[in-house]
Length: 501
View 1 (cartoon, rainbow, N blue to C red):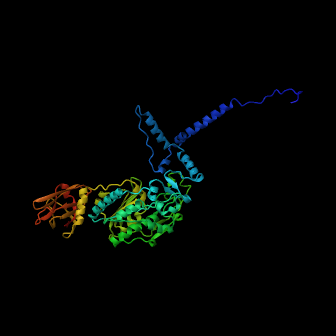
View 2: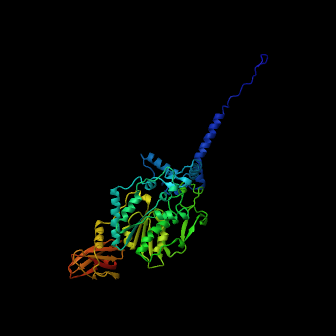
View 3: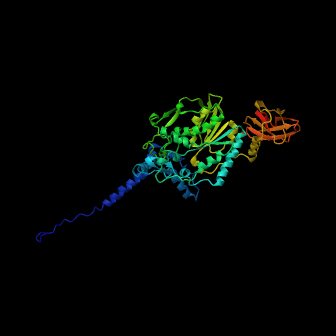
């Protein structure tokens, strides 16, 4: 500025003193709007967000009115209840998981490992089962062996065959899609140990479906790339492994071949078909699609007489076959049984599938199967061993029966038991003589096994079908009778009896 110019009277303007207040008010309104939006949407629609149901867990229930001194705990429970229901929950979870999958290239779930080509694999116990990092100890193998050996003997005394299938986990069938850093150990894993131990049992047929699963991969993906289960094409490998020894034991069983089946791919499925996908739990199953193949029988020889969703959301059912020359069977399985039971039903005149990882002796007594199949996916071998729950005396009686030889023709048919008693046509054959009585379960009953002046009482619970009685203490010259000891026993219809020594 030259000296002869007067200084300007205008000064630079400072920030508007009202601006911070306006920003603060706007931010407060925005925050209040964000906080109030879920509630406003809830009030407007009258519906809470139920997206948590896709995560396969129940919503947290509304807590009861708290007592004084429990306000802090009640506040936490109320917060959990609201977190499971607030509107926009699905949208926020979906947005977060979309970024994880498409931008960061990670899996939205800590339970899964993301492998090559976007394949997902269960982490934790499933990965340990595949890698063999936690093999059974010798003591654990012994417990598994004893439990199943006792169960198989108990079944055999009831003229029932025992089969055991550890269904292959996806890791072992598709290791080529695992993350590059993840490899299996060289030592045998738990599946190898259990198959080896149970295969040595005289009355258990342990089957390995892993080689057959490898053979069927030429059809397409037989496990779901984004899920944790096999498709029906993968289940067909398990079916093949099971039906081969069945056909040897029961000549009427004719296994389904690939010529009996249609191969169904994604293009043949309904438009909304997504298959088994873990991303459903992450709310983005419609954004990430997958391909897998299924197998469907061209002709169905059975009809479903009952079908229901079990307590743990698995599909169970009862079928009857048009062919009556086939055996009866019971399938005890985890969720891997949902895809295989439609094939197995073709092999049996009467078939029932139950979603239980237990031995279910009461079902065996009630249904009178000739085959019991236990199926559990490999990763569940990491879980604690279930106990069969059968009394030691019942196991001992079954083994004594199996060790004896037939001593007379077995009697079959239906006969009402009364107070006067039914003659069995048998007499005591000396030490080690056992009588097996079969009746129709349905009522709790007490039977008396009588020979001359001696008698033995046998109590049967509602579900029990068979009784094994040591009659070697009876006089050898007196006929053995079966009679009712109470009115309920009179209503209990006998199905037959047999003698062994």
